[in-house]
Image (cartoon, rainbow, N blue to C red; front, side, top):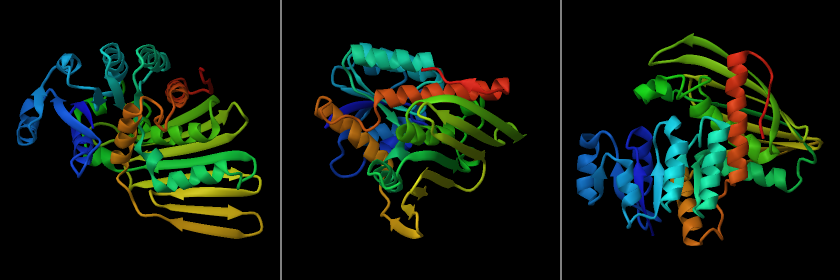
Length: 326
């Protein structure tokens, strides 16, 4: 079992903690760090968890092997680097960073200090997406040519923190909340992007935002793609990969449809899983195996994801087509 500190105990931090409350968890949170001590006091007392409001307390704790970051986006890179230098393995909620150069620096710090770096992209673990990747990898589609995606939800009306309203923390509408998951999926399928053109339509700002973001991407290998996200609308997930002899479509967490030339259609429905537990378990297994069981999202994919993320933000701000840094 990996002893870890949970940094941040807001809405998502509580979800991470809850995922490790079942039988035989692979990660045991022995410390929680939060600025709102009163909010976490009862939880920590009932579970004999240390509680503090300083990140350095966790880094100085010799009993802690890893940190799990559920903090504002702009803090991620600096916190990852500090943890790596303290010899702590790091699980960081998405996005890994808001700037590509910051992501590169964070990845480099973990490599230089030989600690595991994992990013919280729990949709990567959905059964529908596992099947989609399998179908693309086994050649059922022929040559991959095009990818489409959409991920929207109404979380902006349900789970609000003041920092999430700031454009400096949540640029490009729903990009940090939902779109980053689609970026991760597309990078995983097609690799590094070369250029992007994006647009945002805003209908209401403030604590209950309304906006729609659309993105067109070209990848270095010639694959084309587009995706969109809307705040706020009922939750919807779709990733659809097209080849020259077939296509595969993941809808929601558990449904996948494979279509092949000639009219053959296969539909797959899977049991749902706890994808937050799955990603934390994968992180723990990578630590326990000393990296022999790599975390499913490679640092190269993390790098490429934030490179594309930053280019999308730049494209929206400049209202132009932007080259993606590599």
